[in-house]
Image 1 (cartoon, helix red, strand yellow):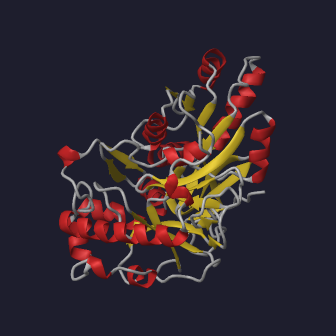
Image 2 (cartoon, rainbow, N blue to C red):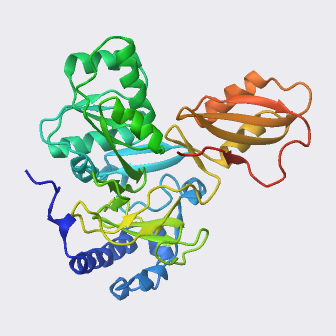
Image 3 (spheres, rainbow, N blue to C red):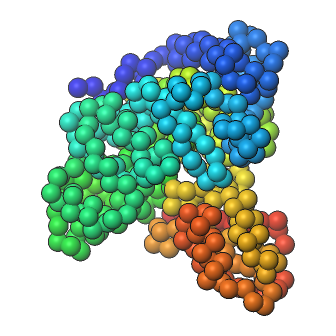
Length: 410
């Protein structure tokens, strides 16, 4: 059985470029003809003229950060969908809220490629610990596993002791989910004196995988690789056992641009990740700015895959921050403040201790603020637990930051 998912992964780079750009022209024409948003923003563009990176770079950028307002103005999907609601399989909700559709195509999110690279093979039982509720993450892993021929335990998030019992009883060999929860499961198995040693391979995402956390998981007996994708785009890039950067998916074109613009940066320079999908006909995103930072790496992977590599997730181009796999936005913090008129100023600080994310909302407030009720609002709006700390008036930095990510990855 081949180490490669398909022949696309080892294409000559010139062949890949020719085939991808032909697909790109078809996708642009499809979006113009079927998605009202792209009919307007790409008005006057001849898809057949898009033959080189400079041509693509002249097209407008669509920003993930703008989707909430766009969908609110033109519900339900902001005019970006190229299929009627009756032709969609699911509609998901991400924080914002932002809504994302999928279609009926097998492995719609294209994650089977990454899972194959992580060592999954037909018949492997997969414990899927991404959420199945509103977010597409759970279905993303499940559909990819099914495309390979793997049965799935739909574990979802939480229920740690029940999931450890399932590992002991069913002996899954693979895990999909966040790396921090994988560590929790492996450690809890030891605490409960249950056998979790069947978990030998994992594809993780949704949060950073610092070297210290990777080592902990590997030392607990599970070899872990990471993936990079979004609810809107599906798979963007994935890690191979060579562990030298993340290899781009074969069905996307990725550009690295100067944050806040659509201008390409030089190879190796850090910039914002902008993605165009080539296979998603229901939601054909063209030059979609993720808000994530990364950089192109020179050369190709020692694993034999010939596609371009990026350095992986290197932070956010805006203040939107990912905590425990969920995006937290400045707009959400504004909603918390609006619920509590006693708050004069607020700043969310995100930290990590022992590779576990935590957040505290520091507020300058008038007398009478109930910090516990404000913390309840924080959880209700952000869908994450956090504490609220009242600080002295004038003590918060005057730097314009609503969210400060204080985490370091070592």
